[in-house]
Image (tube, rainbow, N blue to C red; front, side):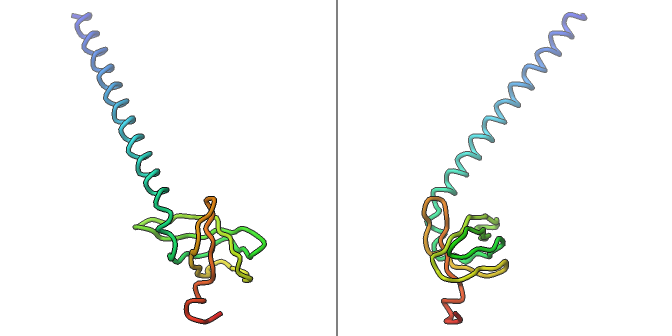
Length: 113
């Protein structure tokens, strides 16, 4: 009887470990596909408005946040525009190059700058 209980317990543990491993593998695979898919659509960022949270200008890098599909993504931002961007400023993404987003002031669309 002890031997039977031990075999059942061992079988239960092995089934649990196997099922857990399958679930972890599936989650890993799905998340990798989602990440690859979101990175391949960076061209869809062009024309979006972001918000500066680390200041920068045409001589330095900064960071911006962009709201995309119910989530917020952060990007390293550069500009060739002679302007000093401060936290809270709105920027327009005009180009993506080497994993950097190039921006101009969003106010330029309204003729404010």
